[in-house]
Image (cartoon, rainbow, N blue to C red):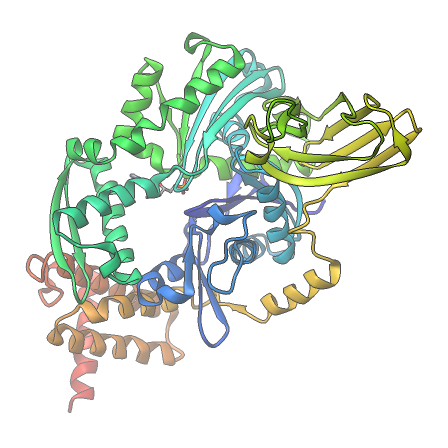
Length: 599
Ligand code: AMP
């Protein structure tokens, strides 16, 4: 049986999992880590960096490094010369490579999760990204469904019996999106009952709120600073946010060649700073309950996932909204990925889980526009209302409004707005009549929507015996085979940076970021140490020693970063007291080498 990989393509981090040895298994990247930052950076020589190394380059190469592009999926937004689909394809390529390395076999099939709130265009864009990365995307799964699968089958390892009568609220708060879903489980079925959310709300909004507060306190105007400086402030804001997850106060430190400022922030200040972000959490929770006609008491389990769910103020906020204190926070960063590993197993029809059934709902309404007798703007007519269980087929009967009408145009949109033009238009289908039709001629419009998010539209005009059937494909992404091939060729001309020396590349990028922030004395010292390290890299040396030297230089950079952040005072990499035994050994090697080179 061909292996299928399960991918959580996140706004901030991505991960890949596989069903192996009867369980969902996380696959490590070249750094031995499970989370790969969804960041892509291009070098002039045609090398593409993905993940941790690209993250270092956000500050040193802001013009060719891109993040948070998932927010642009399905939109026309471009990031430099690249579309969000293309940037995502590099992340997928990197994950595919990690999986191939881990499993020792080529992989060309995947299942990928997307926020439940992703519209049709964004889902198709995700599939296209897979295609560009050389992966056939077997199925797109909503992240909350993946989280529930991960919770029940990956973490709790529930047997089918335990599936009975659970109502689970999944609160998935990531870097860029908030998804809330209500699921019901019974026998071997996991059924999504309703979903809601906000695809413009996430951890980054807390970072931005903190950054604005910092700039306000220090009278820094955003339009007066460079993108790279703003990125440094955002990075410092994210660090403070994370520190406030552990402590009640934290110091925000921004060090750039032009900005050298600190600000102490407490947890209670964070509540005030981010009040506007916190306020937006409640609405989608209320909405899923309202839509499912359930009350808070019906909920048996609350599962928090997504990195932002780690924030105590977020957890506290949810406890207050739901009026309960038994909220479970399980591997918030990994759960969706773990669920995708389970799902990959289901898709492979693995014996252990092949009978598990996962139902889904349509996360948005699908409809057409109808004539508005009392105004100019056409009204929405919903054919498949939001949260209808999938697959679904539904027919509505409309009538022509004018005498002698020669055609009807059925436009198709998705969204919840009363006026059709406020929703997202997915396409239109024109049906020409062979002769003018009298007013009131019936037109039957059927929408069939399947689990893969493919919409089929059937239009029937019995008066003329006309039947028209069309699979709705989004024009913007509907590239021809040749166009896709040509684009794949261009994208393939970029090489992913090598896995084998990924750590060394990341170390050099890290050093490059710190270098301009160092004093002259530290720059000289850093260069010497990098020389020593490079010198070892060039030799066919002992791999154990190489590993130790790498660790040593990492520790040195870490100490240097701490020192820079603490205004060159509290920790000094010259003071070898921070070094452990092995580091001291390498320090001795370095001193000997240094002496030899300075003779
Ligand atoms: P995700 O999209 O699920 O990977 O979530 C990433 C988001 O979680 C980012 O905005 C991170 O800043 C945030 N995050 C990760 N760890 C923490 C933490 N310990 N405390 C607060 N936020 C965190």
